[in-house]
Image (cartoon, rainbow, N blue to C red):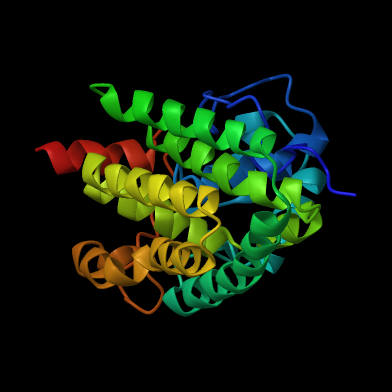
Amino acid sequence: MKKRLQLKGEYALPYDDRPALLKDDSLNEGEVYPVLRRAIVELYLQPGATLSIKDICEYYKMGRSPVRDALMRLDQEGLVTLLPQRGTMISPIDLARVDQERFLRLSVEEEVMKLFMACYTPSDIAPLQEILRQHHEICDKKEVDIRQFLWLDDQFHEVFFAVTDKLFCLHAIQTVGGHYRRMRMLTCGANGRASLEEILRQHSALLTALQARDTEMMRNVFQFHLRKLDREEQIIQKQYPYLFEGSGARDFGGLLWKADFLHTLQRAQKT
């Protein structure tokens, strides 16, 4: 029996518009890992920047043990690199890993889409239409919230996993998909509204294919949608070489906790 839209993914409803680096004295030990992970994958923290356990403990008024445990989990996911005698570095974006993570998502989600097309009902299409409506609202605003837009993008794709009872697969993809997500965030931040409008057009085309139950059209649109990064990676890498693995140009200075790297990037695009 298929599940009905129990959206419980990494970015669970409702959308959290609070900054990931918001200093919150009520933070408990179990929240250190999700807060730090969100700060990394949503580009609040600059890839290649360094921090220490002491930095985090002092900022959140937290003991060393939960912070150390959180960093070890993030190290296992490839999102931080533990540097002996030097602290911890936010891992630069690894394009080889981005490719692997994208391949995993493409392979799994394409099969999920086929299952969705075979079993969906009109009531399953309604949330997709509502998400597209909200996407249009965001794009119509003078200042576009990229994080909210991509959160809605996640919700759009999560519908397919929920309807086909494959939320476990989605969770597995999200758990290992930190480099791919940062690349998505980076390309949208660098390209701004044009990139988001292209995503919106692709989602609209995907919904059209689903409603027509056109498997070939769905497959073509979906692959084009998820391979969007292939067409943008080289440009972004040339613009911001210091953010990528192997560039040799890193920022090993102290981490500015109050800085939002994505917003800094967006402001630079406007100057």
